[in-house]
Amino acid sequence: MDSNWTDLHALYAPIAQRRITDLFADTPDRAEDFSAAFEDMRLDYSKTNIDNAARDALIALCDRTGLATRREAMFTGAPINETEGRAVLHTALRNLDGGPVLVDGTDVMPEVLDTLARMRRFADAVRSGALAGPGGAFRDVVNIGIGGSDLGPRMAVRALVPYHHGPRCHFVSNVDGADISDTLRDLDPRRTLFIVASKSFTTIETMTNARTALAWMEQGGGDVATQFAAVSTAPDRTAAFGIDAEHVFGFADWVGGRYSVWGPVGLSVMLAVGPDAFDAFLRGGQAMDRHFRAAPWGQNLPVLLALVGIWHHQICGHATRAVLPYDQRLARLPAYLQQLEMESNGKSVAMDGHALTMQSGPVVWGEPGTNGQHAFYQLIHQGTAVVPCEFLLAAQGHDPNLAHHHRLLVANCLAQSQALMRGRSLDEARALMGDIGLAEDERERRARHRVFAGNRPSVTLVYPQLTPFVLGQIIALYEHRVFVEGTILGINSFDQWGVELGKELAESLQPVIEGTEDAAASDGSTAALVRFVHRHGG
Ligand code: F6P
Image (cartoon, rainbow, N blue to C red; front, side, top):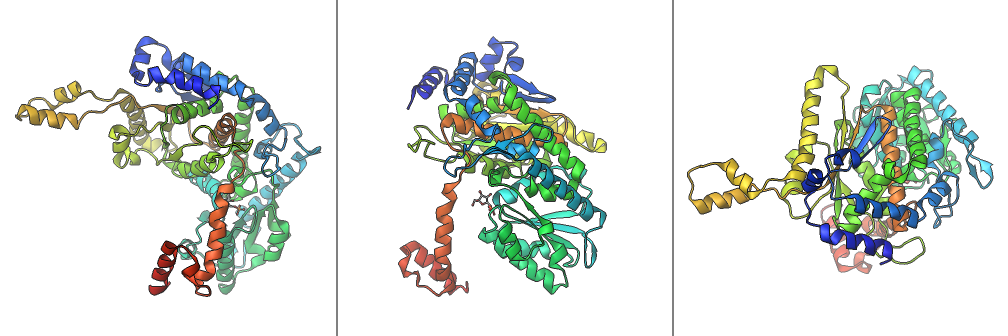
């Protein structure tokens, strides 16, 4: 382990048991000092065990690992995705009024803006009914894609329901036939628009679902020429599938799947909320890019979020991180972040080819509050593992008639981070129980179950309201956080070789499942499971 990490571990060891509440008692302005703001967004990381010395040591990591240089390399189109020899330029997709962005000496912005204009024209035509199916104006849109071609638009469409005034949007991702069958059940095959979203246009799940959708639509009297659109980097494959080139929206290989919601992969979002709101989403992302590029490390939201993450996982050794949006419309954010963070930084080899000397990225999971409170918060409060939590909270909701709901939501969110930090001592538990007429040892036994260790860290991100602009800020914030963590860990956050082996084995197992090859060549467990499936009619 290099000195970057030994310094931090040495710093942590003597303060590991220190109470966060003591930090507040010692420093009255801790909440201000350990918060940072960008526009109307505020990140509070004061409810952690990070003090000035720890923060300085964490910030020093940014310079020691060349973060500024690598950040500029990313924004200016250098091939920082070295294992695939590609630039990393999802930021160009939201560079609405920035300057040129060069890849191999060519400005990519004219093509980016041209595709955006084509998306806008297509969305306007669909939303106005000028482009319709044989049964009339499109009532439903089905995005068929998986991973980055699904999670981003699915999350964003859900997040922006108050701005949704286009056709209904559905998402089919799983190769399990139940997904497409349940989705198509109540749809009209002559008034449904399919978007086949696949960067590679080879992903088995997406292509299988797309063929099933095509057959369903044709059997129901639909028309592929008007009812199918595609989003891909492979125009030859979209043409071979039979999709009209007018309805194909391309993007370059320098947009990673999990970073692609800002471009054509976001077409379903644009259809739902309209081109202007989609623009606002892009502008939110662009605003965060500018902040990330310019703000000093100690005021830089993505950097601070990353450093807190590194502190909790690589230094304190907490294995997982919970993302807890107190914003029901961000229900799909944890799933989206699972791909963004775990596919990006779940690696064990550093960019230089050597094994990592510390943990890679943590397990990320979560659910919206308050639902989670009635499910897994028990473990977060009283389990033996410490789970650092990330709360997200809007100051206001969208429905003035339901403001009392929102006040309850806010109170619950703030109460949870307070409870995690404060805890409840045995003395407090005893006092709360009062005299309930029990023998002393029984009273003591029961009191112990009511103790909360506390001192459990959390950060809280607050924003005025979940608008398209703010959603853009939030997503770009998390993208850059992943980039910063990856850079500090020495990881290439933009490849995903770890998904390949399972795909290859699934392909070689297919003839075994179909019964045209013998299962005996597989390991004993797999062969027995195949026999079970066959015995039961599979
Ligand atoms: O298998 C993982 C992956 O390659 C993801 O990185 C990607 O988002 C997803 O599959 C879908 O890929 P595509 O958009 O090429 O269908």
